[in-house]
Image (cartoon, rainbow, N blue to C red; front, side, top):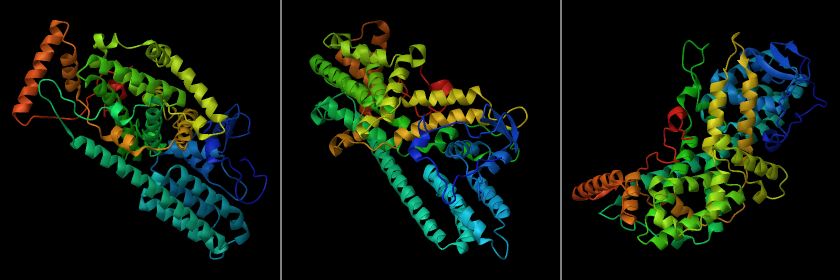
Length: 511
């Protein structure tokens, strides 16, 4: 039997933040013993598998039952692999209408007053956690229809509906505005062209003229990270690696539409930061200046580590490890590298990034016990998070041989995604510097060929292979200059950087 509420009225649920944390997310979704209850299979008190119909029924509240918050998040996250959100909401509403007899000419107002707050709570949680689902008019239609059916029993439901829709519209507008801003930035950057002669000239103000304080730059990088993370919906982690549901013989599922634009934009940001770091290092003509830039970025990376911004940290290390940078031996000989080696050790991929994962757990623990937003910041190395989710998805089937949904798999997926959602909700505590943010987003960067050319011009090729490549690059650039003088600024996937085809992890994850 489902769990009974201890009191009437609005369901008593965890806050959205506590639900996503490791201590708040409990996989124990039922108190029954092992066995089957209403089509749900339990083991050691954990829901492990069930038919899709049974899982949908378990989502639906009644007058004396409300699903646990962890179950709601897990099922709404994973259900899109099997059924489109608008179809799921349609089935939920239809079952509610049927079970609560909302089509009867005379409604049982006493019963509906017990049921009403619970369905409103479910719809509220859905709109708050997965707002992108409600960009479809069909979703809004189902939502309004349900409210109109219960509202005659209590005028307060009209007010609740208006509050729900206003909050949803505001959230979607905010997300849309942020997405438009990222698109504008991407367009502005892609329109920039970098001119090359024999020696690539200084193409921009160098970073040190914009920000000479490593701690300030680390703070502004954290601003960019949290801003971009805020637009990523939890469903994108599922939609990134989906396949056609084997039991769906008529059409491809919703998730195959690959609605992962925010996730992909974040990957492109990582790429950009890698190339920006490499460009800043390769651009100066003098060895002393290049060494100064390297030491500056080492200090920025260290501050990112202290803040808990591991994604920017890895992008900076990746940029400094790109071949055009790492080959500058004379430049590196002038650099105090002790701090850099410590940071490299922290992000060493050995043992499946054991050192990094240890540091991440420490940051996560600090976040759980934090008293300020500054201490709550945890920005994981994003490509490794995606890699973990990818292998979880590939390593376990979505359905068991009997056709049941493998819910045990999706509980683990929900824990990983839920923790990330908690981290991305942290409000950045640092004061924003528009000039630095603008520079990070729009400063021109060299292509991979441009980086190599700048590197060879700074420190001559050491072997025949490098000499041949230098000659080829110079010839190519001379031709480009003759026929217009510009090379498109479009980073390719090199070194540790991740390309836009990142989602095809088998071919593009460079670990």
